[in-house]
Image (cartoon, rainbow, N blue to C red; front, side, top):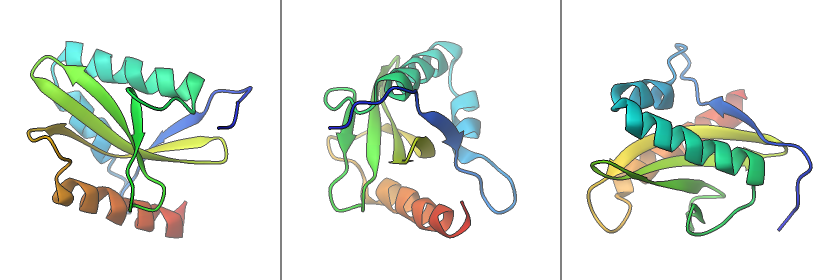
Length: 119
């Protein structure tokens, strides 16, 4: 693991049309849940790399990781990647099962590939 002297710069994935799906998802949540997730993201920003239980590498995704958040109505995940000194938030969702659903991973992987060609 690499020790960092500077916090990561955090960016929201942006669609070609300019939408920021993770930011929109966060704004749709209750204020307390939004605050909890923001605090967890900030913890990663200033302490990366952290590891379990706050973050976990998503094996088989080409370097994607997830922030693991306990919120009022369950468990939220924010999938991200880090490149150089930048953390890009790709996808956020509330988990309803033990395993991360493949459709949620697929969304994040698609955005990751899209960002790689534009960012």
